[in-house]
Image (cartoon, rainbow, N blue to C red; front, side, top):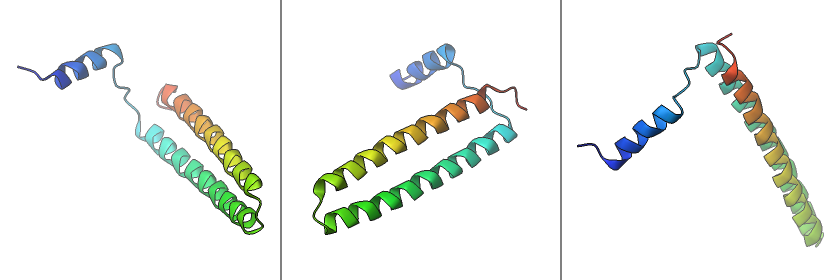
Amino acid sequence: MKSAYELAMERLSRQAPAQKLSTAQKERIAELDSIYQAKIAQKDLAMQADVARFVASGDAEKAAEARATFASERQTLEAEREARKERIRSEDGR
């Protein structure tokens, strides 16, 4: 007798079968992840420096703005990364 988890996984694989990626595609996706992680880390460090400077000067409003800007930029970078990864996945193993 199969567990509910096993039945759910079978149903899921029938609805959206797992996509097989070539080694080159996997490498390109890993490289993209690395590049975007570095971009996000760089922006995070800059934001932390800005926030520290604003907090030291007593400007909590600007510190909050810097955090909000970083969150927006991070979301944009993550969406861009996922879009690029999806393009790689949709290629025919080139």
